[in-house]
Length: 290
Image (cartoon, rainbow, N blue to C red; front, side, top):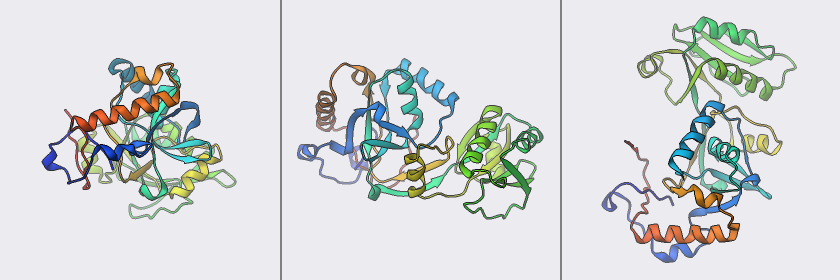
């Protein structure tokens, strides 16, 4: 189950959220953990990390906890690598996470990358210079396979299939590819594929990159082998995602033990419940934050 601090009670699904529900430990699968036991499955965008660090220092709260799956004595981040990295760089010893079971992973999709603030010709030239990949001219109806790195279409409608060169490691080539255009352009994550719609949203759009779909097993195998997917590709669909936790960062940074912090977390959630701030939405929703 998930809780939100938005919406009226009559708009949410009827659900028994009595205090006894919070006797289950940990409540809502939330727990404080040693931040060094949490590892990402993907690279991070340094620009996004820098922006988040600034926001965290200004606002002083962790709004949404990273979602993780437990693997032996550590946790693999499914969503929240930027939050994890920002808090590690800021020196926080502990982190609140939501621990997800395999049954709660409803699906895994990929983000598309809309590349902006770069000339399309310069982008193609830049990618063509990479030693690990090859660009193959293709058509707009090409179907990606797991052997392909991605499909690229410029605003002019020119299409390329990007593949690793012979004897090149697929994951290494994919990371080299994304690193090159992240440094040279502004990347927007999107699920949209229509170039006209994207151009209306991003006037400086140069190209759209579409990645193949992956499985949860593939992502976990990569993470457990101490390798990483590129930043901002995987998009996990989770049942019962917790939002708007809004934990004061002073609690994360305090000298209290993990046991003490987890008891504090339990009381914090009980207080939210007693104040009527926990809502469960079974249906997909849109949040239009101001």
